[in-house]
Image (cartoon, rainbow, N blue to C red; front, side, top):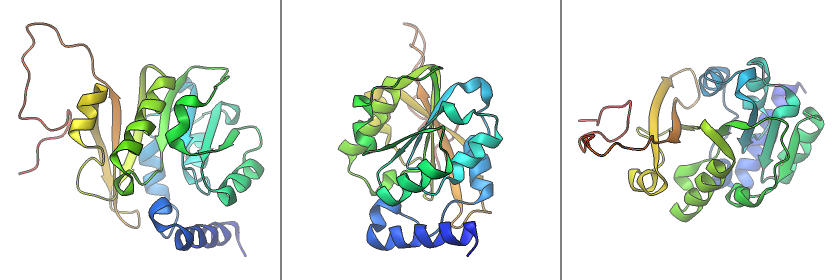
Length: 212
Protein backbone atom coordinates (compact mmCIF):
# COMPACT_ATOMS: atom_id res chain seq x y z
CA UNK A 1 0.00 0.00 0.00
CA UNK A 2 1.45 3.37 -1.03
CA UNK A 3 1.74 6.30 1.37
CA UNK A 4 -1.03 8.23 -0.41
CA UNK A 5 -3.32 5.19 -0.38
CA UNK A 6 -2.65 4.64 3.31
CA UNK A 7 -3.38 8.32 4.05
CA UNK A 8 -6.62 8.16 2.08
CA UNK A 9 -7.67 5.02 3.96
CA UNK A 10 -6.85 6.61 7.33
CA UNK A 11 -8.77 9.75 6.37
CA UNK A 12 -11.81 7.76 5.21
CA UNK A 13 -11.80 5.67 8.37
CA UNK A 14 -11.64 8.83 10.51
CA UNK A 15 -14.52 10.32 8.49
CA UNK A 16 -16.65 7.22 9.09
CA UNK A 17 -16.13 7.49 12.85
CA UNK A 18 -16.62 11.28 13.07
CA UNK A 19 -18.04 12.84 9.86
CA UNK A 20 -18.69 16.26 11.43
CA UNK A 21 -15.12 16.50 12.74
CA UNK A 22 -13.39 15.37 9.54
CA UNK A 23 -16.01 16.74 7.09
CA UNK A 24 -14.48 15.20 3.95
CA UNK A 25 -13.90 11.61 2.85
CA UNK A 26 -10.50 12.39 1.29
CA UNK A 27 -7.51 14.61 2.17
CA UNK A 28 -7.23 17.98 0.43
CA UNK A 29 -5.52 17.97 -2.96
CA UNK A 30 -2.40 19.70 -4.23
CA UNK A 31 -4.27 22.62 -5.80
CA UNK A 32 -5.99 23.55 -2.52
CA UNK A 33 -2.76 23.06 -0.56
CA UNK A 34 -0.96 25.47 -2.89
CA UNK A 35 -3.74 28.05 -2.57
CA UNK A 36 -3.83 27.77 1.23
CA UNK A 37 -0.09 28.31 1.58
CA UNK A 38 0.55 30.75 -1.31
CA UNK A 39 1.09 33.76 0.99
CA UNK A 40 3.31 31.90 3.47
CA UNK A 41 7.10 31.65 3.30
CA UNK A 42 10.18 31.18 5.47
CA UNK A 43 9.82 34.84 6.51
CA UNK A 44 6.38 34.13 8.03
CA UNK A 45 7.97 32.71 11.16
CA UNK A 46 6.13 30.15 13.24
CA UNK A 47 3.02 28.64 11.63
CA UNK A 48 0.24 26.98 13.61
CA UNK A 49 -1.76 24.40 11.69
CA UNK A 50 -5.19 23.42 12.98
CA UNK A 51 -6.53 20.00 12.03
CA UNK A 52 -3.61 18.92 9.82
CA UNK A 53 -4.99 15.40 9.40
CA UNK A 54 -2.55 13.41 7.28
CA UNK A 55 -0.27 16.43 6.76
CA UNK A 56 -1.18 17.58 3.23
CA UNK A 57 -1.02 21.29 4.13
CA UNK A 58 2.01 20.56 6.33
CA UNK A 59 3.92 19.25 3.32
CA UNK A 60 2.90 22.34 1.33
CA UNK A 61 4.16 24.61 4.12
CA UNK A 62 7.53 22.87 4.06
CA UNK A 63 7.69 23.33 0.29
CA UNK A 64 7.02 27.05 0.84
CA UNK A 65 10.18 27.23 2.91
CA UNK A 66 8.76 27.07 6.44
CA UNK A 67 11.22 25.21 8.67
CA UNK A 68 9.79 22.05 10.20
CA UNK A 69 10.80 23.21 13.69
CA UNK A 70 8.66 26.33 13.13
CA UNK A 71 5.50 24.25 12.70
CA UNK A 72 2.99 23.73 15.53
CA UNK A 73 0.48 21.03 14.57
CA UNK A 74 -2.78 21.02 16.56
CA UNK A 75 -4.67 17.78 15.93
CA UNK A 76 -7.65 16.41 17.88
CA UNK A 77 -7.65 12.90 16.39
CA UNK A 78 -5.25 10.53 18.13
CA UNK A 79 -4.76 8.48 14.96
CA UNK A 80 -3.70 11.57 12.98
CA UNK A 81 -1.60 13.05 15.80
CA UNK A 82 0.46 9.87 16.11
CA UNK A 83 1.10 9.78 12.38
CA UNK A 84 2.07 13.47 12.31
CA UNK A 85 4.57 12.97 15.13
CA UNK A 86 6.25 10.20 13.16
CA UNK A 87 6.17 12.03 9.82
CA UNK A 88 7.28 15.46 11.10
CA UNK A 89 9.47 14.69 14.13
CA UNK A 90 10.95 18.17 14.57
CA UNK A 91 7.57 19.91 14.40
CA UNK A 92 5.62 20.37 17.63
CA UNK A 93 2.56 18.12 17.43
CA UNK A 94 -0.09 18.67 20.11
CA UNK A 95 -3.12 16.38 20.45
CA UNK A 96 -5.85 18.75 21.64
CA UNK A 97 -9.10 20.48 20.75
CA UNK A 98 -8.38 23.65 18.75
CA UNK A 99 -11.01 25.47 20.85
CA UNK A 100 -8.49 25.29 23.74
CA UNK A 101 -5.75 26.96 21.69
CA UNK A 102 -5.68 30.08 23.86
CA UNK A 103 -4.49 27.96 26.80
CA UNK A 104 -1.59 26.45 24.86
CA UNK A 105 1.78 27.75 26.14
CA UNK A 106 3.84 28.39 23.02
CA UNK A 107 7.61 28.54 23.29
CA UNK A 108 8.22 29.28 19.64
CA UNK A 109 11.62 30.40 18.38
CA UNK A 110 9.92 32.90 16.03
CA UNK A 111 6.68 34.93 16.33
CA UNK A 112 3.55 33.26 14.96
CA UNK A 113 2.91 34.76 11.53
CA UNK A 114 0.15 32.49 10.25
CA UNK A 115 -2.50 30.00 11.29
CA UNK A 116 -3.56 27.49 8.64
CA UNK A 117 -6.91 25.86 9.38
CA UNK A 118 -8.18 22.61 7.93
CA UNK A 119 -11.09 22.58 10.39
CA UNK A 120 -14.73 22.20 9.20
CA UNK A 121 -15.94 25.47 10.75
CA UNK A 122 -19.36 25.28 9.07
CA UNK A 123 -20.22 22.13 11.04
CA UNK A 124 -19.17 23.64 14.39
CA UNK A 125 -21.25 25.60 16.92
CA UNK A 126 -20.72 29.36 16.78
CA UNK A 127 -19.30 29.39 20.32
CA UNK A 128 -16.59 26.92 19.31
CA UNK A 129 -15.66 28.88 16.19
CA UNK A 130 -15.40 31.99 18.39
CA UNK A 131 -13.03 30.16 20.77
CA UNK A 132 -10.86 28.90 17.89
CA UNK A 133 -10.49 32.35 16.34
CA UNK A 134 -9.92 34.05 19.69
CA UNK A 135 -7.25 31.50 20.55
CA UNK A 136 -5.56 31.78 17.17
CA UNK A 137 -5.34 35.57 17.29
CA UNK A 138 -4.08 35.49 20.87
CA UNK A 139 -0.91 33.88 19.44
CA UNK A 140 -0.68 35.70 16.09
CA UNK A 141 1.74 38.61 15.86
CA UNK A 142 0.52 41.98 14.49
CA UNK A 143 0.04 41.56 10.74
CA UNK A 144 -0.36 37.79 11.05
CA UNK A 145 -3.23 36.02 9.31
CA UNK A 146 -5.56 33.05 9.70
CA UNK A 147 -6.17 31.02 6.52
CA UNK A 148 -9.37 29.02 6.13
CA UNK A 149 -10.81 27.03 3.25
CA UNK A 150 -14.44 26.16 2.64
CA UNK A 151 -16.54 24.07 0.30
CA UNK A 152 -19.37 26.58 0.64
CA UNK A 153 -20.24 29.62 -1.52
CA UNK A 154 -19.08 32.25 1.00
CA UNK A 155 -16.76 32.78 3.94
CA UNK A 156 -17.54 30.15 6.62
CA UNK A 157 -17.16 32.72 9.40
CA UNK A 158 -20.28 34.82 9.85
CA UNK A 159 -19.98 38.61 9.58
CA UNK A 160 -21.36 39.24 13.11
CA UNK A 161 -18.62 37.05 14.57
CA UNK A 162 -15.94 38.83 12.53
CA UNK A 163 -17.32 42.16 13.77
CA UNK A 164 -17.31 40.99 17.39
CA UNK A 165 -13.66 39.98 17.17
CA UNK A 166 -12.53 43.00 15.12
CA UNK A 167 -11.58 40.85 12.14
CA UNK A 168 -12.05 40.99 8.36
CA UNK A 169 -12.23 38.26 5.71
CA UNK A 170 -10.53 38.58 2.34
CA UNK A 171 -11.27 36.19 -0.51
CA UNK A 172 -8.02 34.63 -1.77
CA UNK A 173 -9.21 32.36 -4.54
CA UNK A 174 -11.12 29.30 -5.67
CA UNK A 175 -9.95 25.97 -7.07
CA UNK A 176 -12.03 23.55 -9.11
CA UNK A 177 -9.16 21.05 -9.09
CA UNK A 178 -9.93 19.98 -5.52
CA UNK A 179 -12.53 17.31 -4.69
CA UNK A 180 -14.86 18.92 -3.82
CA UNK A 181 -14.03 22.40 -5.20
CA UNK A 182 -12.98 24.83 -2.46
CA UNK A 183 -12.34 28.51 -1.77
CA UNK A 184 -9.74 30.08 0.54
CA UNK A 185 -10.10 33.16 2.77
CA UNK A 186 -7.59 35.18 4.74
CA UNK A 187 -8.84 36.35 8.14
CA UNK A 188 -6.92 39.25 9.63
CA UNK A 189 -7.27 42.04 12.16
CA UNK A 190 -8.99 45.22 11.02
CA UNK A 191 -6.92 48.36 11.14
CA UNK A 192 -8.23 51.00 13.58
CA UNK A 193 -10.78 53.20 11.87
CA UNK A 194 -10.05 56.93 11.80
CA UNK A 195 -12.70 59.19 13.27
CA UNK A 196 -13.83 60.69 9.95
CA UNK A 197 -13.40 57.56 7.82
CA UNK A 198 -16.74 56.50 6.26
CA UNK A 199 -18.24 53.10 7.06
CA UNK A 200 -19.27 51.13 3.97
CA UNK A 201 -22.18 48.99 5.10
CA UNK A 202 -22.76 47.66 1.57
CA UNK A 203 -19.63 45.48 1.64
CA UNK A 204 -19.99 42.06 3.24
CA UNK A 205 -16.29 41.25 3.21
CA UNK A 206 -13.28 43.34 2.36
CA UNK A 207 -11.89 42.14 -0.94
CA UNK A 208 -15.12 40.37 -2.01
CA UNK A 209 -18.25 41.97 -3.42
CA UNK A 210 -21.57 41.11 -1.87
CA UNK A 211 -23.07 38.43 -4.11
CA UNK A 212 -26.21 39.46 -5.97
